[in-house]
Image (tube, rainbow, N blue to C red):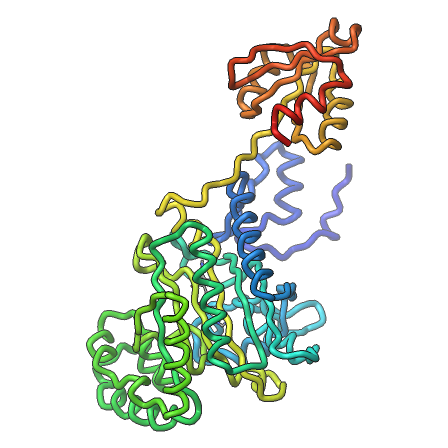
Length: 450
Ligand code: HAM
């Protein structure tokens, strides 16, 4: 076929073989370049993918029991949604995937879901408050990939808008806490703090800023930059040279006004009543700017320190307003699915579901009998897999064995002419039974205790 080079793209990127590469490969028998998942992203294969989905199912069930509705919001958002909520956070300024689309609009791949949910709240103005929603899905942050830290990762989470009742804080935290328990995790700690609100922040910020400015010469360059944008976030520095200064900095909890202190006390006593244990963590600062009052993190002591945050959240009473809505208090959390599964591995709980078929069909007559019987069994609710490619009895039995199915059904020429099938017990000691074809469904259902 003639090759019109003029119509082909001339732009190339480092990791994306373009048409030229593919043409060259096909014309000159050069090995076609193989694609790999992008750095920091992963293919989650079976059975891990099913395990991931079951985890989301457990979360969805916890949320249903607590009266939360599901929200599915877009992965793409107007860049402005996130710029408004995190001007001084790495998540927004350094790690966000943003680009201009074909209409010239500036778009972000969401790095988190809270801002999207609050944008949706402002957009749809739900009639009844509090508005309680749960979500799940992928987030994107251009971080340095390592175990438990990915560029595409999954979260499950909840958000509640429209109430600042401390009982809502308690409920939200309890949903997260009970979810970890449902998975069987026992080594998750709840770290709790209050970051105050506009009533106490000016005084605290002034004290903190004064302290940090007095010590600015000894702070890391990164923290000196952060100090100019949001002094509070300096407390979140993990850099070694900042640690001594951070550990002696004034604490928000010492500056809470009576109202915020009372709110925090009510949250703590609500948790106590539910026997949810927590550690007060007065230096806990979250990685996003919008937090006010109650803030918390769930940390797994079964994981390495650097990646032990398996979830976190808090109040964001000013977020709706900053996204153009009416002043509306809000609180929520997001839990990292990938890390929770690592914590489950570390604690040896919540294994992948058993995906073995219930029965494997071995057809020695060409394959069409397997197709018919598989259809009957599957319609009857029995998980049936089968061999293909007209392979030998030995080869098909090997696949049947590897599939883990407890039962095999063998259809040979004799069975076909006599209208019956052989049912073989693959794991137990009941051997083989000859059954009429129309008895098979009921016989399997009773053996599988359906
Ligand atoms: P976040 O602390 O940025 O909060 O993320 C929540 C959880 O997502 C983390 O605790 C961690 O388990 C997981 N996570 C974060 N980054 C990564 C990553 N690169 N790789 C793997 N897992 C990761 C938020 O996203 C807020 N929206 C939480 C919230 C909801 N606050 C109020 N409502």
